[in-house]
Length: 214
Picture 1: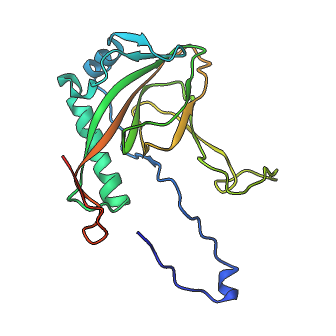
Picture 2 (picture 1 turned 30 degrees about the horizontal axis):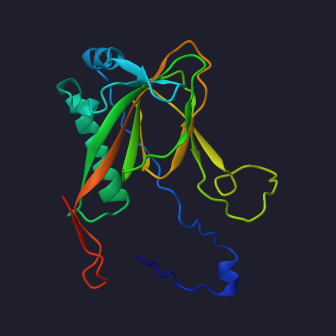
């Protein structure tokens, strides 16, 4: 898909900054307040160490459990806001949650730098946190040389940080690199992460790229 911007004359162009090809991270404004039963269900899940640096729930489809159907509905509603109202995806394409699991970071533990494969949109919902930051990493450098900057901003930074907050949901493209810094507190950091995929038609008949996913 191409967007054609109106041509500006030289004087107008010098006064305009275009931030091209941004990564659409959504920090959802609406919080979901976990009930005591939901919180106890999440904290009581059986855990295992996969990466050696933090614990994950053995159950990797936690949002399919009856105890978390309210949270799943909240996540699904925000996914639809993200894709249909913000990204303007056509509504004949359905986004649905696939895998979902919980992460547990104890004191001194962190979450490694990674992306989510086999997924379109990923999300992380914070159950309990001391405010440790989640960080998103720039996928590629804008310039071929590493330069020093007098101050950091969204245009020249390689990493952008966001403070985590209990009951807050983050949504982002699954290819966006991210990590979570070391937990330096005595509060166990608990998050619920999930992936999504799509059903429906993608591509274009005339370009011979039409594909049905079901």
